[in-house]
Length: 452
Image 1: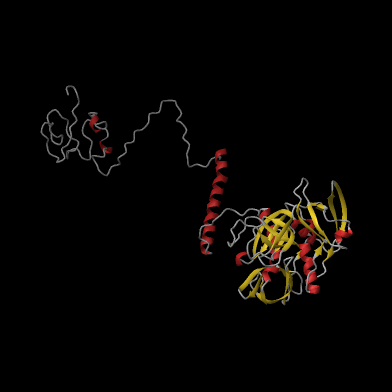
Image 2 (image 1 turned 180 degrees about the vertical axis):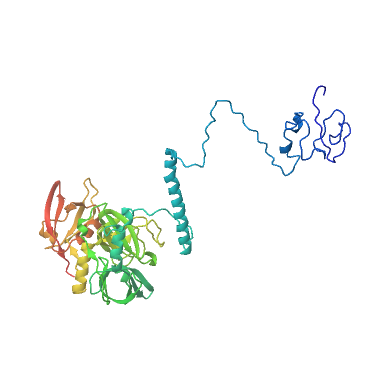
């Protein structure tokens, strides 16, 4: 371009390039003498600042790195100090100085980080050496919640305490083996179960304890109408159950049913008392009819639970599981639908003591028979028969009287009168509310044992 400086470039091959000025290596008209020439190597050319002619071409020739490949590549230019001015002080960064607040705060942080890193490394090394190099699952241990501590009064604590006293009962019969449940009632080996568990047996029985051990048993006695039977097993160290008071139960009380449903030994189910004095009439066709004022519960009970204990929240036996209701057709296998019934333990204990003492149980009677509901407002059962000199007759009751309540319990079905009376022991006094004509009256009846 016109007026622009043209800077000479050397060709990659080192030779002259067409269209460019001749290389300054040789003398060229109009170019100053080359500093590379042999005549100038090692000495300043004439006219440099160190020469007589003051030429600027050789002012830094001695420090030119292209002149001497071994010369330093840095060019040091001395600064110009103004006359009379003090040089600016320079602080040595490597010199020790007074620490600042920032430094003081950083020291403990760095120290803690180093200590943590070192501790983690050492811990990992020890863990790996000790064989604990696997990942640790779960969080840090926390305090065990109250429900998981299994205190003696908890359901788990109650089950643990009662299970050693519950057995599986097996009875041989002509048709095979009948299986149910039972529980130890005395330290010398008496076991309570249901009559229908041992009914029809050949006399050979055995029990299986909760630890899986077995022992032979003999049938002491049984009462078909109360559905209670007693067998005896010889084994040291037996732990009898603790008995409760079935008359003290209230609807809503928690209960456990323990036994061997469907041959599943040591099964525990929980529920509540759903109703009290639920009068039951049960039995197989052609067999004895069983009456009892049962404890109704929603604890799951199935075949095989029969004869097992119903236990209250304190671990005391309050009933003997006996029967269930189920929505099945005739001939089908019944299963739990939350309607299970147990014989009150006060009644079962009385029958058991009779069987152990005499070989048979007494039956409590009132000395009257009802023929069915009246069908009139107010309900009640009309007496169709009153035995002469019996308990009802002695209390002044007559045929045609309508029994409304016994001890405050309404009478609606003939089953109610028989079942509720058998709940009480012979000699018990009950209050009977009845209606004769249009008058309502009360009388006290002393129940008795039947003649058989």
